[in-house]
Image (cartoon, rainbow, N blue to C red):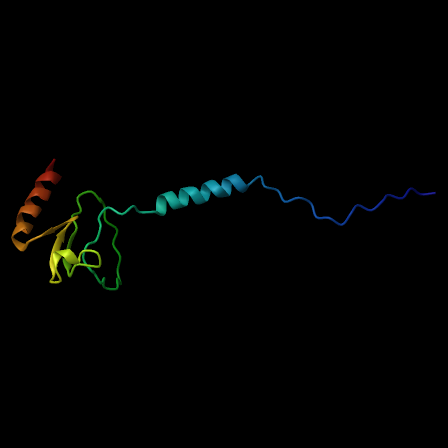
Length: 109
């Protein structure tokens, strides 16, 4: 007579989690590289134009931010007329030249 084996239960085998740490670290590195931390707080309302061409900048450090527009929500205490923002500070028109000269001298170092 032949020997019969019992059929195993129809349950599925456990899912292998051996590659799960690799996937988690890959996602972690992706978000660390792709995330940009905000350097300046925008204190004016600014509507940006649509970009049709993108050019990557070589260095981020020598960049100075100059914005012009009406103060946004939360900054109404500075008035409702258009203002100029140099990096993180409101400035007058006559302060722009001094700001540019100070930034240029800082870049030379």
